[in-house]
Image 1 (cartoon, rainbow, N blue to C red):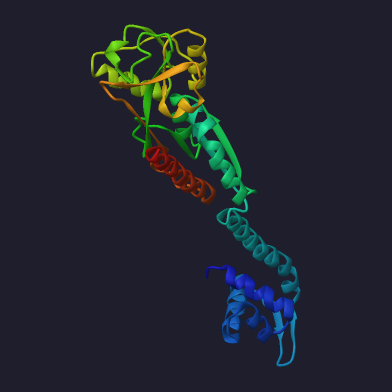
Image 2 (cartoon, rainbow, N blue to C red):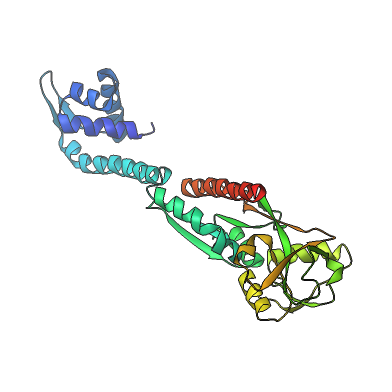
Length: 302
């Protein structure tokens, strides 16, 4: 016979009260069921655990020997369940998000702040880095999910949330500064400042231009868009940035839309296709998708 938790619970309840009717009420079973459970346990162990009479119930010597271990087993099970329920109800937990630096600095702070206010005991870690870094952290399980542009990996699922445009930043004295829009071919021969080829933004641009037989001539390639703007302000050359960063652009620069081709940079949430998110990670995942969707809606409305 297999011994189950219900047998231990029955024994411990009877040992506590030394009364079968009271013990049955405590664990919410009928008295005949309780008696059967105790008898089954005694048969499995091979010795009586209680001495019984019509008026008296007492632990045998073997019952007294068994009680601390049975009580410990019951408490361990309930402790384990309570421990896991704390994670389910977000009283405990840890979530790790991987993100491009541009995402980590602009989109994540507000999301994480809201999540932490609601779930102060859940630890949130942010790993920021370039595309290869994001892929490695997701595939190794070091990150629960990521916020980034689309990554072409079979074991990763990309859930698109919104698209960002590409803008050319110029000094006010540049020949093209008076234009509302320019084609890529009109400045493709110039040395430009743009983010590194290891970033998702740059990969999106390079792939789109390659289809048109075009290739950028980059003079400096930092990791951060903020650095691109600072270099443009210093007069190093025209800069290529995401449109969502224009609110941070230095006042001495002119922003011009780029067309032919119009390049859109898709931002979304990425996770392993085979992963099952923890309750904490699932909650932050849902909040992130909601907040990023709101961001997209606000940009469209604007």
